[in-house]
Image (cartoon, rainbow, N blue to C red; front, top):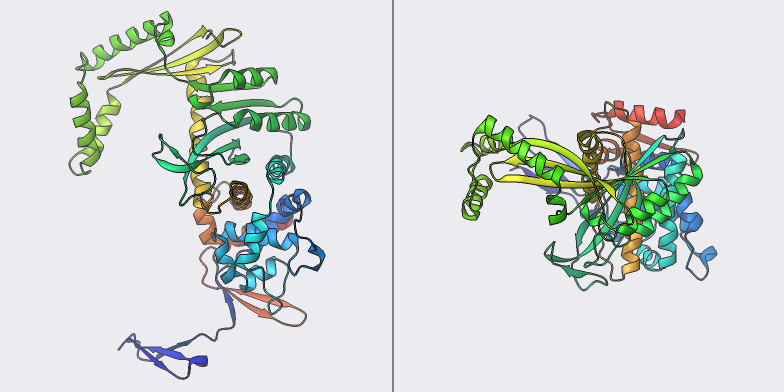
Length: 483
């Protein structure tokens, strides 16, 4: 028999027989023990960046008599932020965490005092936020980014992208999107170089790719220019942001840009493009022979074979061979669309395979640098933006389950601020440990077993002696305290 219960329910024990030669007995009488022993680090990072203070400074208190409330606005904000940063993404988790001794401590309460806010209280707090407050809160991200810069940056790279957030129910603004094939919201996110979020805007499901992009740029670039007049700004985006309004605004602010533009007949027939395709074809024939070309049926059959075959059957080898049978060329030329006030430089990347030439066009106002260098060293860095979005989704930024649109916008911003805290923890670890994932930061530095001993004049935290990442914890605490 593995387990056996004994005693009354109040001190009920369970005994185990694991073949160790002695009985193993357990009971729920260990005192104040928490699995969130690393959350004091969040409070330390928060105090340095001033995230909670920035939110409380601009967020109104919508309660009629806040001075008589049990929970202050600052406590509610801290509780919401720290829950999300630790992996508890929903307000329902508050009913469990409100009595957690570590969460009580970092929110300014001694274990044994009154508990933190309940799920109902947090829901009322989040649902009371107005649209105007959301707009001002988004500007706090820019202020926090400026505050954390110790020196004036020479270049700031801005990457913008959108993502899908499926809705579950009849939520306001949740509309069917044919591209994603589901009813959803479409977040618009913008990051500075390194992955710091400067904008997080919730949009309805059928929003255009560029909807809200220009207002976000108009809110961000002037503030950065005011702080650092000589900073160079580079904006990157996919073809969803290839609009004349964005081109014109960036040029009016002396900002550089690299924006993908959709293929069209006018671009494909440019003499420079035709010459580069002919050169790529000639080189392909010399290296691999005449391209066979594939019918639509043959192409579909090959893709299905690659998709469903196992590695043992040669899937990886076939993909490798397809990648090797390719010739890449670059060219650039001046082009003026009807909606453009002047000609602009267009970079073209040509990948010639047995299926023919695959073209990608990039519009830019950067006059120097070769087409290859601008594409590979500058534009391709935009792909890192997708990884930053995945990291935010690891913190459940797509868990927007409220009915009202403005409330879900506020929840998205809370998740974004929580991401700022966890991301800063990872940065402070240094280059050796700073490449770990957001989930690893949570598991290694926040999810630590701790026993809390509360006395009249002092509270002792006894972290697990076995914790394998004690060195990283101590390193981070040292850097936080050194300023």
